[in-house]
Amino acid sequence: MNTRRSEWHAPSVIRRVVVFAAVAMLPATAFGGVKVYEKDDFTLELGMRIQARMEYSRVAATGGGTEWLRDNMIRRARLKANGKVQGCTYGFEWKIDGTDQNGSTPTAAVENAWIQYPLGKGISAKAGLYDAPFSRDLLTSDSKQLAVDRGAVSAVPSALGLVDNVVGLNFIGTMKEGHVQYAAGLFDNRVITAKRQDVPMLAGRVDLNFGATKDIYQDAHFGNEKWYCLGLNGSVQSSIDGAVAQDSITTEAAGVDGMLDIPAGRGRLMLRGEMNAMHIESTGGTGDKNSTVRMIGAGYLMMKERVQPFVRFDQIRGDTPIAGTNRDITYAGANFYQKGHGLKIQGDLLFVSGNGESLDGGRLQAQIDF
Image 1: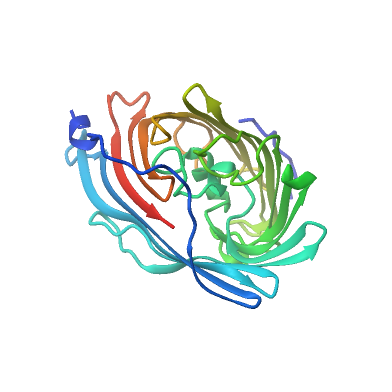
Image 2: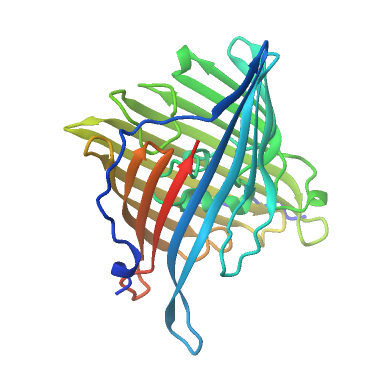
C-alpha cells in the first residue's frame, strides 16, 4: 500500500432586477423570538423567518450561449423555538426552503435541534443538529449576511462535510469574560455515506474578541459598540473508505477569519475577511486534491443605521472537485434595514470574471426574522 503523503498547497438586466426605492423606515434594532411561556425553570420562545426573493441568473441556452432565468421564490421559510429547562438551553428550527418554480422540490425538514448542558466553569456540552464550529461565514446565519447569501469560503468546504448543520457532540467554553471563546467536537459527515466512515469528523474553533463579545456572528451591528474579532478553526477526518478496495481517504481543512465593525464618521464601518484551505489525501495517491478559498467584504452603515451599501469579493483556487473551476466572484449591493436584521430588504448583483459577460446575476430579497 502506498502511504505517500502529498504536499498541502495553500492552495441590460440591471434595471429589471434591482430598483431600490426610498421607503420610510423605523429605527434599526435587533430583536429575538417572542416569549410565549415562562414558569419555574422552563421558558419557551417562538420565532419565524421568511425570505421572499426575486432572482435573475445567467444560464446555458439551448443551442449555445447564455440566457437569463428569472425566478420568484421563498428562499427560506422557518419556524423556530428555543428556551431553557432545568438549567439547559435548547433550540429547534423547522424549514421549508427553496419554494420556487425552477428545478426545486421543497420538502419539510429539521434545520436545528439541539440541547446544551452547562458543565461549570464556563464550559458546556451541546448535542444534536447545529452548525459545526468552522468558518465565520458558515457560523453567521444566512439571515445576517452582508450579501444576500453566503459565499465560496463556506460553500467549497461543504464538499468535505463542513456543511450548514451537522449532527454531533460539541464542547463549548469561554474565558476572559467572553473575549476568548472556543469549541471542539465530533460530528457525522453528511456528504459521505455512513458505512464509509469509521471515525467521526473532528472540528474545532477559537474566537478572540478584542472588543464587544456578544453577537459576534453578524455582518452589521447597530449602536456604538466596537467589534474586533479573529477566528481560527480546523477540521480533520481519517479512515474514510475510498472507492477502491483498501483505499483510505483523509480530509483536512484549516482556516482563519476576522471581522471589524466600528463606528466611523456618521455611520459604522464593517470589514470581514476569511481564508480556508482544504486537502484530500488518498493512500493510493490518485485522489489527492487541494483547494484554497478567500473572501473579503466591506459595508458602510449610514443614514441613521438604515442603509448599508456593500461589496464582497470571493476567490476560488485549487483542484476539482473540491473547488470546481478557479473563479473570481464579486457581489455589489445594499441592505435597507427597517428593524435591524429582523426586517430588511437586500439586493445585490453578481459579476464573475473571465467569462466574457458583463453581469451574471442579480437578487432582491425581503426578510422578516424574529
